[in-house]
Image 1 (cartoon, rainbow, N blue to C red):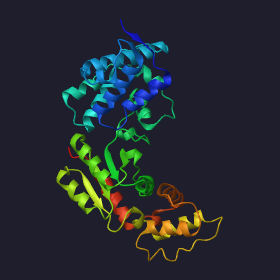
Image 2 (cartoon, helix red, strand yellow):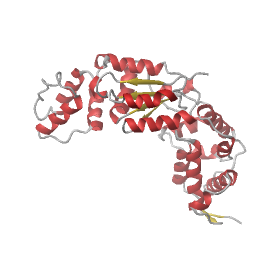
Image 3 (cartoon, rainbow, N blue to C red):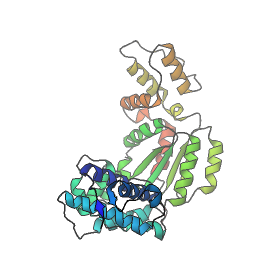
Image 4 (tube, rainbow, N blue to C red):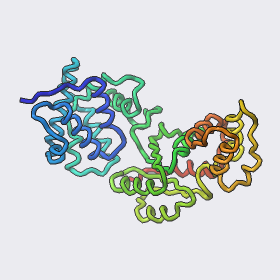
Amino acid sequence: MKKIKPLTTEQILISIDRLTRFKEPEKRYMRVFGDIITSNLIEPKYKKTDIENLDYKLITDLAVEIINSSLRSLGLEPVEDYSINQQILDYEKSIFDLTERQEVFLKNKINYAAAVQLIPDEAVFNLRWLKSLATSTCCAKNRKANLYPVEKVLLVEGITEEILLPEFAKLLGYEFKKNGVFVISAGGKNQVVKYFYRFAQCLKIPIFVLLDSDAEENYAQIKPRLREGDFVHVISKGEFEDILPKSLIKKTINYETEYISMGDTATLESSASTVEFLEEFFRTRGMHEFKKAEFASFVRENIAGIEDISPEIKEIIGCLSSCNRVL
């Protein structure tokens, strides 16, 4: 007879959050189900090394029993309605290329009909999407600002692009969340290649890649593996900061230095690198260290209209909006 330590409400929410994030399903389910079994199944006891050798069906059944038992302990009785589970399976199959073995994880009997009652209205996007499945309001037309279901991936090198591209796109009438654009800041051009290789092997949805101008070699690595519907844009000169309008950079600098003194931005126009200019500007004025994420957030606050969007950024967003799934 099994002995189970019930999951708390918070643990249930964390588990279903992790189960419905945008990551490869096999890794996602193996990790979440494994953690639940090793932490909350008292008897029989399994170690992490044991889980790795178990059949996927047994792993699924054990984790589901723990989750559903925990829901019952919270007064949420089982509901013989697995329509949410089927919608999750259909969605995952529509964006990931799954094997039959991997589908075993998704063909589970988690009592989502009860679990969604625990999800607060202000929850993260994927949990809000999960909650919407209970009322069949999850289709793309009813997406509102929910991001899920994901319909395309935007791979970028750094945090500046992640912060600013959604804002620029919104001004151009293309909202990322309403169109299911999932942005991943890879942390460098080499990491972009690694992400692309992973996703190109398992995804059925388009991948849009944005690279700095010095990433020609990385583009050459990606190009042979591009699928129909994928797209790569290599920035014409420098990095993303270099294709921001200089007027927007100046406006942001003056915004940051408003309570100190007006910044001298005369050399910005002739500077070969916007980032190098900003690093020097902050250093010589005795201000705090220049940080890309922080400065990008200030830039976002100073975007007033489409006049603050450069032609190349408009081109990038135009290409992204037309980068669609090929059926």
